[in-house]
Image 1 (tube, helix red, strand yellow):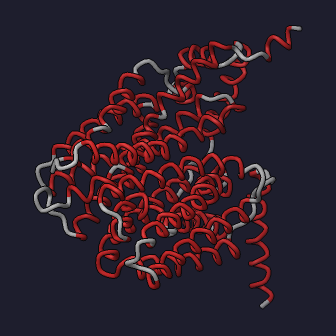
Image 2 (tube, one colour; image 1 turned 90 degrees about the vertical axis):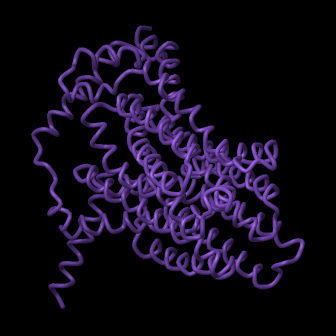
Length: 476
């Protein structure tokens, strides 16, 4: 009978964990809103009476955030290690608020560029700190759901940005400064995150790493069902941290080991495949793509909300598919679907561009594209990378792959408006189609299947591949 009582979830601890999950993932919501809001705000701020942006400077405004995010993703982990996950998210909320005000009040292109870079630092920092915080406070049986909640909040933030863009554009039609109101909305979740984090606990794992064992125990008692579970987990954390301190630090030289280098290159390849689908050109410039196809400004903003809704619903589908389909099959299907969708847009642009039906065909195909992207590719990006990189190389390996995601994202955000302005929908999407075929081939020949395998089995598979390659080279 006692055993049954011990296994019964504690309603108070579950409620507290839910509070932690909701408040901390406002960092993910801000991530999504700040990357999505530019989609509708950019056409307005580009007007000659506002910031007077050219296609080149439009790309710089969008990509400044992405460059900042690349820097923030590298420094964010170090900052959270130094000052704590909770405190780092707390300071990031301040940076989100200040940078949002800078963007909203920007009098010229230069101030906007600096403010977008600062906003990117916050986005990149949140991208690495929030999932780490959630993973370290959640129980083992709730970890997947709690960490995945952050990804759901990101796409929800993008959807919210698209919806509010459309509402503000309609309500404030004729106001030249409508884009400032679109951008300023992000200050609200930043304030909620600021005050919310004041009431949340620090990660128990971080507390133990800093020698604050009694404080870590107090936190674990609040977020675990029983005191026995809290004591057991505290002992496990202490054992792991002791083992980490005794282990030799990983150096960059170790990454040159053939089998490790192969893993890192595959991880970078997966990152590139996910970004080179063209997804972020749609998430950042979807309104302009729809305007280019023939929609009016307001109609494009309203139609673009369908893209955001599709992303949210497809993310739920993707979480379900992960339990049903093999990883490589799912990724290949996603790339095939996104490539086919963009090819159809390119062909439609060559054959029926200028007709009344063309804008609606483009919108339908964008919805198809995002369905394949968010259901089959988006959920696999970090899952596959985290599965193939061994525990010993997790920190440095994930850091390289995260940085590569943002670098490719930055390049795409920078050049897309120039491509669209210079060559139109046809050629621009045809470039993504060609890259898509190479991505499918990469997955087919280099990405291993990981579903149903332990992390140790996956690592052994890479080590054995390296031995076979050496034996073949010796026999030649």
